[in-house]
Image (cartoon, rainbow, N blue to C red; front, side, top):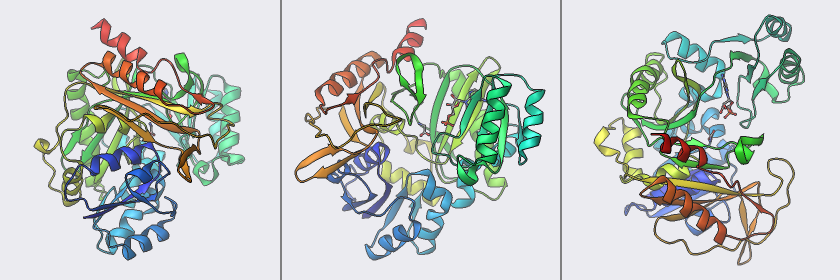
Length: 424
Ligand code: AMP
Ligand code: GLY
């Protein structure tokens, strides 16, 4: 089979490495991929949000199955266009990808189907939102409705900060049209858990849980980033909580989407907060998380392509998805200065990964024979092991063997998870 993977980050590298394990896979194209992914797939310079470019590429390259990984092409309807040409896909159609594409939509869905989430109000008028804040309590959470490169959530500590956020989003349009509507919601507290799931629209099978580390610096300080590291499983997510989430969140979401005529087929990501009043949904993503995928897929024992085809065909069953016991840790190596300004173009020196070690490249390009840095997040160093402690040690040992000038990593990935695991 010829497979097309849309996207070009560490998540896509992990997906491609997993797909390659299937013997039926003849060729994998990555659009656009990156200089590191080029070792595992043929990378072609079509941007991930260029839906027309992707569709013409798929047509002219006899693609048998397409995996659309990033949010932009999913929300733009890339899957609908590919399927209209008879190319089967893994990923939700446009009318289901809205679960990530519009936070107002997903909030309405949760209210309608009784899915636990933060209390909130939607606004399309800045003055009304500002008047509401005058009587509100703080911190308050202000969210742009649409996609905003992961930056559309502002936690306002005071009324003044809240008013500024509303003006930035709705009047100055710092996130463009994504800010035509906003949500103002209650501030929740508790540990966060990411749960990715496979769903064919009827059956929903959660993958192993994980924990992201979004802030740039140790002890969760500094700016929000795309994710500086992950561990799986997440020790806060006990079996009892998993059962509760299945009953109160996962099944009602998948069934609700189907009842709305928006059957979701693909990877549905539940961003959860384990609050004192039980688990609540913070956000949905219509895709694999990055860098969660980098710790989840190394623990998947079953064949990823077979699962993806079953998701597409609507024949998913729970025996098709098996994870190994044990744990995984991903330490992201970034360019110093990320997520603000940073320099790139430095040569990367990589060790040969041993068993249970993986290097997933996110921001790098080829320069002749060399691989050089080309982004804020450059790569993820991943280790899988029997215990979380061994996985964390393994990921850091691997990360320390990788060299490029101005490399930066957090030193405490997994620390909170290990502390929680020790309390048990
Ligand atoms: P993002 O991934 O950009 O949507 O980031 C959202 C982050 O903002 C989450 O990971 C939470 O840490 C935080 N957040 C979002 N909604 C709430 C809420 N209602 N209460 C507290 N924190 C929130
Ligand atoms: N790691 C969070 C995300 O992929 O949005």
